[in-house]
View (tube, helix red, strand yellow):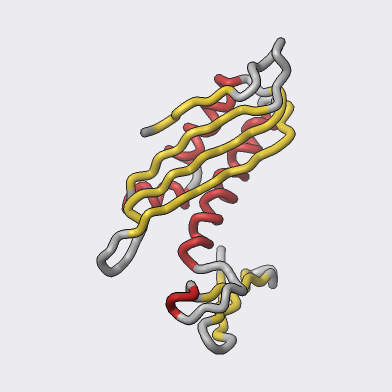
Length: 153
């Protein structure tokens, strides 16, 4: 069962530990007393989305024999002005490198973001969740360089 323990380290810094002993430094943004030494909890949520999606996408692409050489994701969130200041919009941009079949990539990304990644599922309930992907680095014979596709808008 997933588990986390968080300890206050003074000022506006907190250390989170998972069940395996890994730790991460979190803190408030500078406007709320943070010193810029740790990730904010809201940015950690976005990072968790990218990691969660990555696990599913990389697993599916490998299972389908795709020659994936890189996975990068950029995620931006816009928060509500009123409390609780949850995300009202989240935009995810995947960049996948290698000799990849566009149809397989599109299915993996779409299935991950709409059905498999629990963090995406939770964020989709409270915000407008949009995603797109781009394939870079393929050869002209197998995949055009820089294929871009909008999956959900």
